[in-house]
Amino acid sequence: MNICKIAVLLITYWVFPGALLVTGHWSYAAQPTLAADDIQWLNRITYGIDSLTLNDYRSMGRKAYLEAQLRSVDDALPLSAQRAIAALSISSRSAYQLLVDADTENRRINAMPDGEDKSKARQALNAAQDRVALEAAKRHLLRAVYSSSQLREQMTWFWLNHFSVFRYKGNLRWTVADYEENAIRANALGNFRDLVSATLRHPAMLVYLDNAQSSVNKINENYARELLELHTMGVNGGYTQKDVQEMARILTGVGVVSNFQPPRPKGTALTAVVVTDGAFEFNPARHDFGVKTLLGVAIDGTGLGEIDNALDVIMKNPATALFICKKVATYFVADEPSTALVEQMAKAFSRTGGDIPAVLRVMFNSKEFHASLGHKFKDPMHYVASSLRLAYDARTQEGKTFANLKPANNMLNALGEGFYGHLTPDGYGLREADWDSSGQMSKRFEIAKWIGSGNAGLFDPDDGSPAQVTGFPQLSSRLYYEAIEPTLSKRTREGLASAATQWEWNAYFLGSPEFMYH
Image (cartoon, rainbow, N blue to C red):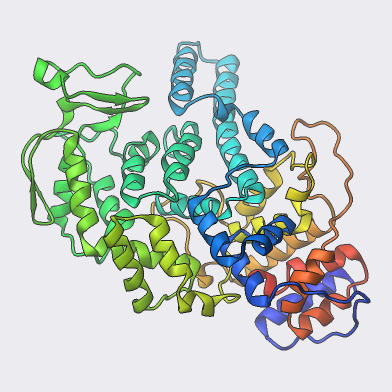
């Protein structure tokens, strides 16, 4: 069957369920070793099964496997993936170093006379910013595909979206790698309060939401509003415009070091409360030291410590637990999770002071979670990552780590969920309706064809040297027949059997309805 015809059949199936009915069969017999429920459970907990994931699950059992994921006990990557990450410039240079170097170069360029040389130097600096952001995306994708700690990688993506920043705001491209690594990923399976605090103190967030220059004489409310509305309590959390204003007063003086020199306020008393940490600063000369009242609680004007007091107030408010738990459940369970499930998770959140694994444990052990298996639509990140993990069974092939993640990054951009690419701070959508349009499905099938028919450029050197010829993946493998084929509907199996070539079969499977869900 022609691949274009298969595409038509797929789109027809999505628009008119039940319309696809083709005949044929493969000669291989399926040999399932795990129940369909096990495979669906793994596909939700991880970015999609591969051979080593199944081996770990068989040897550990579901309960132990989940606990290992919640505690992120095995964070090691294959040696080749470790080396690929270590070779990135972001692995040896902090956000502060990158910003200092960029500032030095920018000053040099500004001092140059106008002309072609100045224009080329400016273009080179912009290109360097792009490379840093691309390196951050490459590192993220390597971990999503190769890490054994799959739940940690999913939660890193989830929180990165929850505390979303847009890379093209100001100089953010220099800082997004550090933001993801040290603010988000370091706390992804930790405590929610620590996670909020880490994002609050990071230059990426402070620049993105305009707090870097907020001061007692010129208060900017942007970050204060989003901190309450999007990051903690939710739009219906019960706070008022007055609370936003008071939070903005608390945040005055919190920003990014100017000219990379610590602030020097006049007076010994102010100098004593200056705080700098890398590119972060608290400049007391710009802070409002008056008494504030946040959510009915008085907060004395002591300086940077006011933020800790404010976070204590916000964390204890029941709205925070409910809002965060509903969003987590929306991502992992259902577009509209039940009130009962959210409340159970919120109780764990409040009881533990925001312990993320405790909240996840309640959710993963709930009846609602198990009833949802196989019915949650994959967002683009999960679709791309699961496609790559399954197509190349990458962790079983040491030394054959993806050399070029630009194609995978381009896939996410084409699907509308690129790294650090959401303009507004609300982040990408979490519901099926956000990602199941006809245009989205057409693009997914194009990606399915791209991956299924060759190496998709993933193994080609990214330095412009000649491409490698690796052939197309063999998706109809033992892994497929043991773990996946028994979970497919009759019409999908018949449709797969109608494929005339292996690469057509690959494309059809990666574009099948079942593969769109987990």
